[in-house]
Length: 217
Image 1 (cartoon, rainbow, N blue to C red):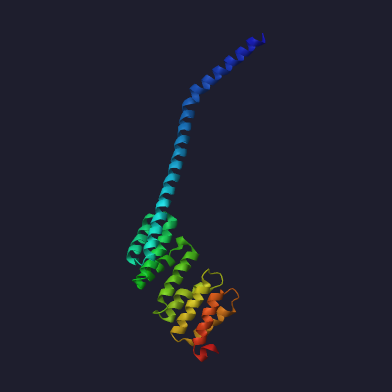
Image 2 (image 1 turned 45 degrees about the vertical axis):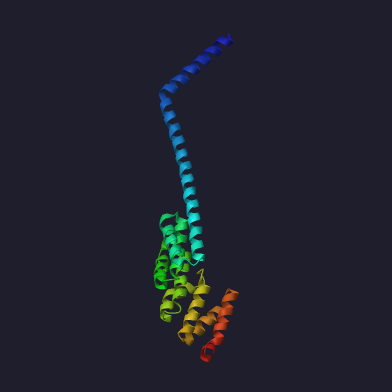
């Protein structure tokens, strides 16, 4: 007798399942296909991104090799291409290296590229400061002290990543332009900062040894 009831229960369950499938089976199949398509699309996107990144990495290495061989114009063109066609990380590296390569033949044009980077808030404060320091290093031999101050003095605050380099460039600019009071100011700031790197401290001390007597007092 119990076998009969079991068979009836199974038949009822089968009938219910059939009804559910008839009602929702098409929706379930469509949902399954959508999930498969999404997973496949995501995998394809990951593969494409990895491919583009690998290509950009190879292009970047080739451009660096051109730069190391002294082929600055070719390197500049290669880095410019990377800066416009590569994934975001390599684009940023390409922009910096394009400016560095350009500095070998056209310093003023390189400064303009660094200025664009320094004004680009999308790359973050640290990289903006790096671009500003690079521009200052190019200009230190030709620009006025006031120009270097306008560019780099904001970077000398204690919370800025390249403060030590900015201070050193300012000290060098002041020394080159014969501004003894400014030379003394930056020298004092550098040597009294316990976090000043040893190399920076040593170079500034050598600079001060060459400064006029009134800059040392």
